Image (cartoon, rainbow, N blue to C red; front, side):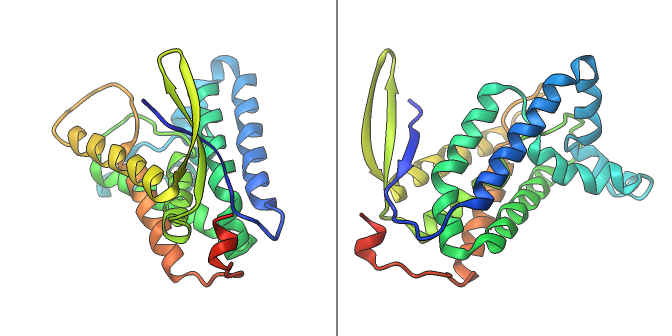
Length: 233
């Protein structure tokens, strides 16, 4: 059972311009991917995050376009429609309120910094992997971590699918995001003892992004401190 967040119930006082911009950028990048046809694999190999390239014996021999650029470009690449739509839904639900709380540019910094931290976590845990990692999940995990810290009691309208039955409930962010993080951690811990040559979910990138977002939220000044009753409405 995978809970699907649909919206929160926080009164925002500013328009979520950078959240929208990031959603548009991700969709635009995905449309470019679709237009590439057989050249898509080349793009993924060039700009996907490949941990093995960051070995100290390799990194000095590679140009910045092969090392620094993929850390950022890979955040805007996705492996399919479901991958893209799932990430954009989470960004829409949780990004708007974090952007409203910390401000537009600090929100963008939190997003990108979480994405970088997610990439570094993936490199640290799988240093020899030659499988490209793509997706905005690590950066968005940082937004979830910030939300977990800033709005733990906020109510999230959540879709609960169970076989062919669907219903919506309102869950506190503390429960929903705590459950999400626990799943990432348990799955990530399990992969430490499994060596695989195939692709999969970058669990430790999610964990690294979430923890980074949570820590940044603790030190970032809130642009607007909302009364508790307003934040929970």
